[in-house]
Length: 242
Ligand SMILES: O=C(O)CCC(=O)C(=O)O
Image 1: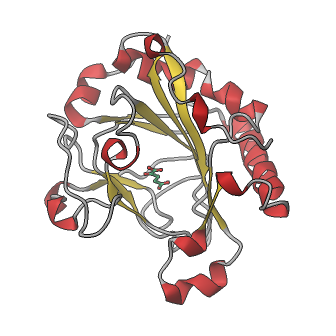
Image 2 (image 1 turned 90 degrees about the horizontal axis):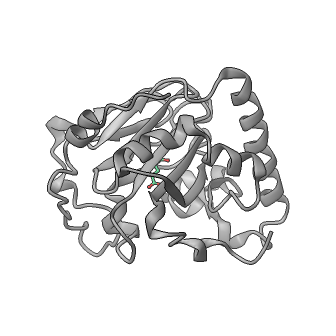
């Protein structure tokens, strides 16, 4: 049985779990990530609804060398039995189950690549930027396939920023990035983790990741869960192409 520190999660809005994926399984997950990347890179037209390109998120000066590089694939569980199985693994789901108080249903699933040169995710709150149409009873489980630190863009968070379910204003003219003035700089914590570790977090938590300035990838598989009692509320996310 996995012990989950739900009090700490409630206080910080996030929780680190070490070694949720064993080293031998990590190797096969990386191969699966490479297979999906290859599949989508070979036929980008077919998979276009799933692909986010790096060039669409980088400053103009950095775009030329990142042309054709994929930043994110979403969804993936319908393309990949391997990642669909991982989504049901108790080592992953037990945190979401403990926090949400019962069985969980997969709400969202994606593979964030952040290959060398990969772009920033600006400060945001998942609920206010992306999921307002749905419930806010959501827990995101962010599992690293590579070691991650500040050089290759590990996640950074503001612990406790979820408390009271605040909705911070967006940057002027935007609909994703929280106004940088609303981010308390002195409370920012980078969370360097090893491959196979996981950070789970609340849908109101302020989080960010920097450019990958290193020569190594920072791949992560990201699952978000809702309580199973609400049903499969985000089934519509799957595109027709397989
Ligand atoms: O991959 C990352 O570094 C951050 C991803 C993220 O925050 C998101 O997908 O909402």
